[in-house]
Amino acid sequence: MRDYTKLWALKYFVPLLLIAGCVQGKPYIKPYDYQANREAVLVYEKALAYEKEGNLELAIVEFRHYLDYYDSLYRANEAQLKIAQCYKTLSQWDEAISNYKTYLKKYKKSETIPEALFQIGECLETANQWKESVSAYKNVIKNHFSTVWSQKAQERIAEILKKFPRASWARKEKIAVRTLVRTMSRK
Image 1: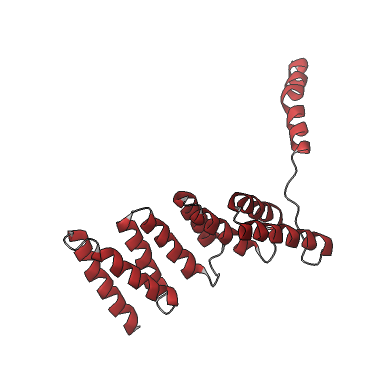
Image 2: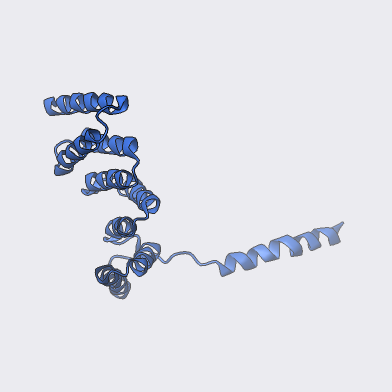
């Protein structure tokens, strides 16, 4: 009986120990660690340089590298937003929307939340997902009425609804948006 216990331990426990020893977690960078922060800045600047050159695939890779290793530092929210913007520029709408949503979940208190919500609407609009884009723009109006993005969202909704003058959903949305704007302006 003891032989089976030893064999079981050797067969299952030892490989688990080996695997656990080989797996390395992300390093935690302390804000006062000058060298690590310097490396983080270099990675971020490299990503920005790739973006400026128009090499967006490499920019995405570098921004992801920044997030993988330096997500506790101050530019992590900007890196996530940049990834989404790069995908949008590459016309990869689903990836862009996914990354904007990741940004919204991770950085709820960011001042660029209205812009990210608006960008989701733009991606949906460009992908000809009209109803979804109107819904996304309404979300901007409802939750961030006092921003410039709300005004832009109202303009975009008006442009979309003009394309469908006879559609019943467009007429309903027009009334809903008008009501929403009236309600929000009273607050």
